[in-house]
Picture: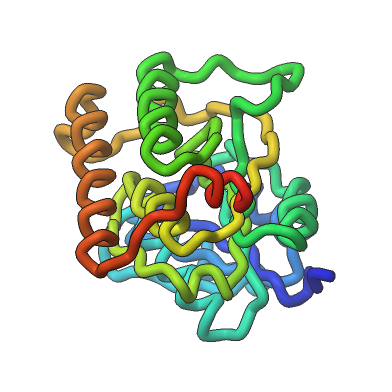
Amino acid sequence: MTNSSRWLAALPVYNEVDYVDDVLDEVVRHASTVLVVDDGSLDGTAERLQQRRDISLIQHAKNRGYGAALTTAFRYAIDEGFEGLVTLDCDGQHQPCRIPEFIQTANDADIVSGSRYLMHYEGDDAPPEERMKINRNITNELNERLGYSLTDAFCGFKAYRTSALEQLNITNAGYAMPLQLWVQAAAAELKVVEIPVPLIYLDLERSFGGALDQADARLQHYREVLDHAFESVLAQGVSFPSREEVACNL
């Protein structure tokens, strides 16, 4: 049985001054230990975080990227001996009250991944069309190449057992980090479970950085990251499990 007191809630944060306090006020109600990784915020978020006494805080001196912030949280969870961690965003898209459900589901999984498309909730927002299209394309390609049956490749609301994280070597620093994660998880034959979460979009103008704000360029970049992740695993002499073996891990 999972001991929730040995689980960490971790939030990557970058320029979220409008949301950070309200979100963290809710997170600390549902998690016994909370880590915030401030990825070089410049809008006053850093100063807000430094005033709080109910969280642990790691601050990157400069912005390194979403994936880099998450890998900092992964390393902290491993080094501090946590059984696992739940990651969620700090922009209001994820409901902290669902943290216990993620931890509970991790009793029988290595990775529990939220899905905004697994179930419809009353009041769900309409996702930006280009983001949804890219998500569907990449999710389908992942499923085809890995034998998965994912419905949402990019949701940041997840639970990871640290025993699983110790088997991964995540190096992608950007928003494409989940693609490297899925490839390595499949190669390590980790058990993955999706659970539904509401579809909430408060930040419709998110920047993915420079040229990646263009949908076509972003889709091409994601495919290149996916190809490189496969090449890296195969170069290490690791073979991917069969579709039947993958199905047993879902």
